[in-house]
Amino acid sequence: MCGIFGVSGSTPAVPLIAAGLKKLEYRGYDSSGIAVNGEKGIWLCKSAGSLSHLEKKLNQSAPPLSSVGIGHTRWATHGKATDLNAHPFLSADGMFAVAHNGIIENYTGLKAFLSEKGFSFVSDTDSEVVPMLLEYFYDGDVLKAIRRAVSELEGAFSLAIITSHAPDCVFAARKDSSLAIGFGKGCSFVSSDIPAISGFAEQCCIPDENSVAVLRKGEIKLFDRQGNRTAPSFKPTGECGGDAEKGDFPFFMLKEIFSQPRCLTDAAAQFTDGKRLKKILFSDEEANAFNRVKLIGCGSAYHAGVAGKNFIERLAGIPAEAELAGEFRYRDVLCDEKTLALFISQSGETADTLFALRHAKAKGAATLAVVNTPLSSIAREADKTVHTRAGTEIAVATTKGYTTQVLCLFAVALLLGKARGTLPACEEHYVNAMLSVPRAVRETLKLDDSLKAAAKSICKAQSVFFIGRGQDYAAAMEGALKLKEISYINANAYAAGELKHGTISLIESSTPVVALATDGALFSKTMSNVEEVKARGAETLLFTVSDAMSDDAPPDRAVVLPHCGELDIIPVSCALQLLAYHAANELGRNVDKPRNLAKSVTVE
Image (cartoon, rainbow, N blue to C red):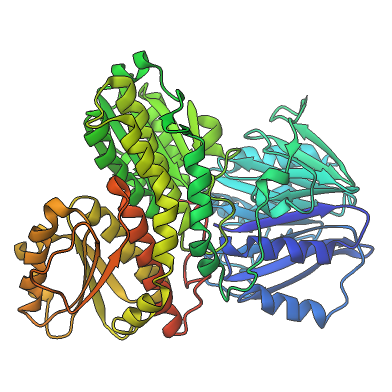
């Protein structure tokens, strides 16, 4: 949930670290800080609030011209967002500084132990025990102290460390948490993810679990938990970068919404060869062996999984379930060698999803990662990987990450169905549907002005209801989440047929109800639910497609979207993204950085 950045080079470290933290601010923006090795010891500057508060402090101070340092941008888990709770943290003797991402689960016991040894603490965080442990274990060997300290820590975490005992080095370690290292132009870098060091480093890699990296002026050494030297496998960072500039757009989120036609084109291209599907992912024997499919994710990735479940059952004829990763991993799930388990994560580092993957593997399931980061932990640990090809996503609320997940899950369902001989229509029909999505999204984005006007009708509401049936219910779940994430309006999604089973009691005069009805076979059913809420005073906004629309029971306002067959969920989701964006913007929200949220949820 936090962002770490460190550098050992030949130029002043503070500007490089500040630039790196800017790329990581999507991971947390409650507070930030920088520590560098100076001639008089470790120099530290940190501040509560967004990175701009730290930048103001840096401009008012005179940081050392040291070329070695670490930085941190925080999403609070333990302790409020204050200057004292901001990272990096110093050891009691001031000889170690640590930036930490993750959670130290046993910090209370470690804190009690260290307190008995005479150490005192100034923050409310779990992180401060780490530099104290380093000081406690240090006996002249920094690497040994780090290995001993890391061995005492329980939980998922990554660390960046500097010390006056080795002033030209940055040390890094990880356990079940994302961390990238890289080098280029005479500098070595460590970061919470690869995109943040793209543009700085020319080569990068993900260090192994429980390893310690030593970074020094363009040189990186890696050691395992026993202290043995290991050989990192570096790859070019260029393809992992992505555009981190807003261009002419006021927010990254709006830019990312409008980039979806290109991203969806890239996502579809990996599965198709002309009008045919490529023969990838599954052999006929593998596909026919599966008798159950699980789709596991959190937040928007879970919503993509709900859509994927519907695709797989319809196209591949396999019973499928969408599951929340945080629930899946703590259940004795029905999962064996005949189960295909799909793990969906934009970052590929979502903690609950990563642990759910390990839980499924332990049960013998075949595992498939659907991720936007091919070198991520989930991608590396799964048996097979689908890269969604959305490109770097900066805004906290996912847009292109979600829609490319949905398209890739449709493709997975097609590949399974083709191998099993269960496709209800010819292969070319479904490939055409997939290839038509970018065009449909482009046409949808042209409705921006209409969606902006529609947003004004809901942005003053206390709560908003989203309803739909089938895939429209899956889209409603994501639309409601998007609205509440960035506008802070209470929004909830319901299967339209469930309204009369209790929820309709909440409908009163002027309550906004967003109804999704893109499936012609279900259109009249959903419209009967629209009539039910209108009869109780609701203001209704309908999203449908041209092929489904009828003249019966018109809503208060309708948005008619282009049709793209089984994948109508994607253009309707894009329309709901714009609706949420304009509502949030009308309310003056920070669309890219909504309160209390972080982009990559790397803690439970």
